[in-house]
View (tube, rainbow, N blue to C red):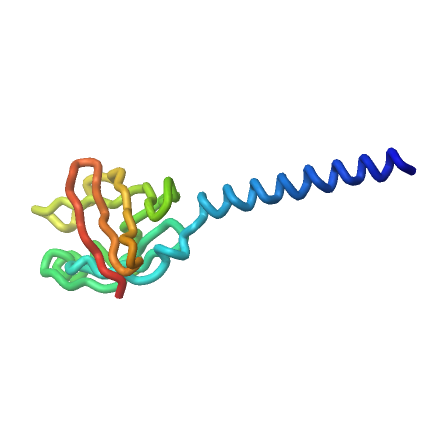
Length: 137
């Protein structure tokens, strides 16, 4: 009986520690609630949801022209594969369009999103150095 209690205690302890570690890792890897929602770049609004972002509204002539031509649509993915890398910082990819021809997707480019302390603005910095400041809508 004593060895059964001892084994049960060890198994319970290991299980609790394991669940705690997994819970912490999941919180780091999947902490999207800080980013989820609508963000306004000034040129377009996108909705970020669990690591991916889609177009919601278009404001600038570049995006409106492409949308009117049926090449870019509300709901099209513009951000993808974002994972949390540190406190208030995520990395993933942004879709890069040809600035001379808004109908052409050039590539997906690595970028980093950093959430400001007030959680109302983000900065998106691409691998090429281009950046965009967005506000929560």
